[in-house]
Length: 470
Image 1 (tube, rainbow, N blue to C red):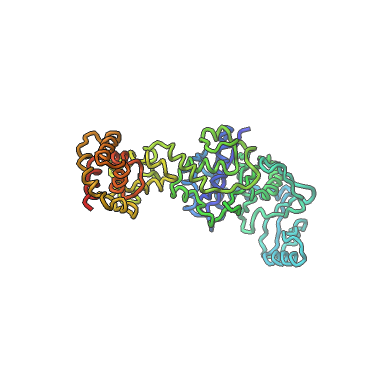
Image 2 (image 1 turned 135 degrees about the vertical axis):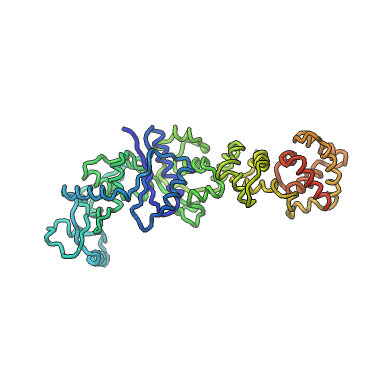
C-alpha cells in the first residue's frame, strides 16, 4: 500500500502553529514511507474563507519547507461530487430526507433540554413516508447512523477507541440548499484523493466515529486514523492568543529559522530517545506514528529560542545574511534603506561573532546596527561612563598608534593595542573598554579586535577620533 497523507486546513485565518505541526507530521510520515503528501483547502465556508488566508497557508508551508505532491485540492470545487455521494447513500437506504423546519428543530431541542434528555436530533423523519412532507419545507439529507452496537476506531495514536452507536445522531449530509456539510465532504474527498492515513488533531476524534460509518456505508476502505493531542500553553491550558504568537508568520517575523521551528514542532508530542536537535534527514528517517505521545504537549518559548540560537550558530554566515527574511533584509528594514554592497560585505563579516549570542535573526540584526551608523554611534548610558575621565585622552593617543598599522587584521590590531596598554602602564581592559564604547556606542559587543577588523581602518579611526574629542 502506498501511504498518502494530507493536510486539510480551513482558510479562515493564518497557519496556526498547531496546524503547522499537523502538516509536519503528515509530511514526515509521507516522506518516511516513500508516499505522498497532499494539500486540500477546505474552503466550503464561503463567508469566512479568504484568498488572503489561502495565500498565508501556502506561504507558511513553503517557508517551513513542507513541499507537497501535486496541486492543492479546493473542497469548494467538489460540491457536485459530494452531493452525488449523498444521493448514492439515499438510494442505498443509508440516508433519508428530513423535512423538519428550523422552528421544529428548535422546539425539539428545547423540549429535550427541559426533560434532561440529549438535544441531538431524534430521528423523527427516519422511517416516515416522504408523502407526509409538509409543503414549502426543503429537506436536508441525513445519514442513517447505526443504532445498535458500537463503532470502533483503531487509532494509531490513541489506540482502540469505542463509542456506543446510541450516542451517534443522524447527522446532516446535504443542507436544504444542496450544499454539503463538512462531515460528508471530508470523507468523499479523502476517499477520492486516496488518503490512506488521516493524521490530525484529537479534537477530531469524535468525528472519526461518524466518518467511519459513512465509509462503511459506501463500501469504501476506512483510512488509518491517527489523532494527535493538541498543543497547550506553558500553563497547561489550551494554546490561545494570550500565550503569545500563534501563526507561523509571526514566528518567521520574530526571527525564527524554519528549520528550528520545524525541529521544535517535531519534538512537541513526538520523541526519539533523548534527541533534541534533529536534522530534517534524521526526522524523515526516524519519524513514525508510534512515537507520538497521547498527552498534550506544552509549548516552551525559552526552549524554542535556545534551539533557534543553535540553528543560527550552525547556519553559514552568508546564508544568514541573504534571503527575503535574512539578517540583511532585517537590517535594511531597521535602517529604512537598502544596504550598499560594501555594507552587505561588512554584515557578512560581522555575523560570525554576533550570532554566538543571538536567539533570533531579528535580535541578530538589531545587535549589528552599530556597524552601520554614520560615524561613531551615539553612546548609551553605560558607554558614556566608559568614555568619561581620562578615556578621551587615552583614545587620542591610541588613534595614531592604530593609524600606523598597515595590516588591518585582528591579530595585528590585538598586538598593537596590547603593546599600547603596556606602554601606558595600564591593563588591557582600561584601553579596550573605552575603545569598545567609542566604536559601538555600547559597553558590550563582540570581541573588540574583530569589531575593528569588520569596521575597517578608515571607519574605525574616524570613530576613535570623534570620541577622543569629547
